[in-house]
Image 1 (spheres, rainbow, N blue to C red):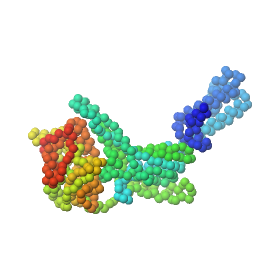
Image 2 (image 1 turned 120 degrees about the horizontal axis):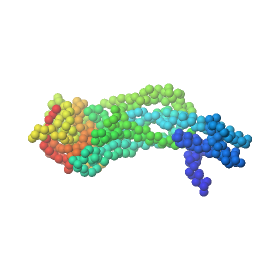
Image 3 (image 1 turned 60 degrees about the vertical axis):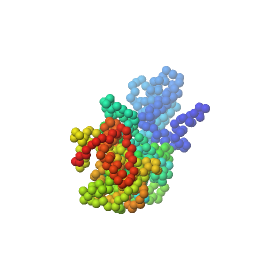
Image 4 (image 1 turned 45 degrees about the horizontal axis):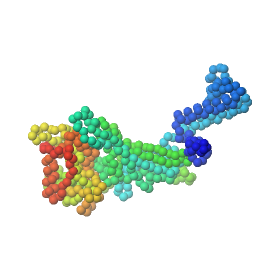
Length: 516
């Protein structure tokens, strides 16, 4: 019974089926403090056992002899003050000398072994690469390689996205609170991501050869902010942290590696974290473009590539990005708000020296219209707008909400709107106009008409959505009545249904728009 328990719970018995590798695996798994403490325990136990054997006829001398033998086994017996009690019997002298050599060799060998075994085997490219695959679908690519000579087998990858989010989980009377944060229940959303099925499991990882780990992106994950591509989300999970000012955090992409190292008889578990976005982040943890290849020399021996890995062509460009240019075809814009008024749309384009071309009315499948983006009316932005009270002329300190659309899982969800053709000049005009929105590719969701090219739609940015949430929490978000009525009139004139969810806590008020 006791022997069975030892076999199950003794650390050296659980690491690897090969006896010769159990000590190596045990040392590789443990940290410096544990190994040093274990070594000292071994020295004291062996010294005590040898002292008992040597001084069996003089039990009162065993403690003093143990102290001497501990110092002797460590090579520090000359530091002890007299009187000393060295070993007496010849066999004890031989055993003490053998144990001294064995323990000191084990100690030095452990130090060398731990110094040579790295804490992390894999080196990652510092930033994600966002590009399109051969089928034209967006993907995030992680580049990494095994930077040691250790062979790793049965490697598995996992990925999680951690994003701080803000949510109003209870109704709070803000007038009774001293700080806005008291109205929040902040938490971090952990989202498990799906990796490319063909690349997430590796049977063997050969040293120094770079690998690519793709993460497929969904429609709407990549948007355009004033013409600049941005990563809005990964597989529908936002990468932008939200919260009250001062209570934001950073969003992270965590990559988990699990594998086995045969030469060390141990399992490998590593994590690598990419900082994607946040107030304290100087630049995003991703960049758009493709990677530069490293030209690996084929090897003539098993488990190894050929030549000197440090001399392979392409290492100097490993952390650089290779720009990818595309030639856009015909382009369209889908409008679901005030743009539905074709006459007003034509007048707006004419004011910028442009003309309204081909247009028609259709539906966007898989979305619903709502009010969940807002501007801060207290902030003055150049070439934009703000609102005043039409009776007093004062500028209210509120958030002004606008219409937006959200993706829905229901196949019956649809949003009616206008679809008009746009060239690069028109796109630039609307990229500057829609400061609260990001331009998103919705070509696959256009329903009712067949188009050639790319259909764009302006969907609320994470920052604009956060402003709306702050306004809801502080009871200071409103909808401009004139803006709402113009939309309702435009939809009625076009013969389109207009529905939009409005929260009960968002009042509709009279405001006057002032352009800056």
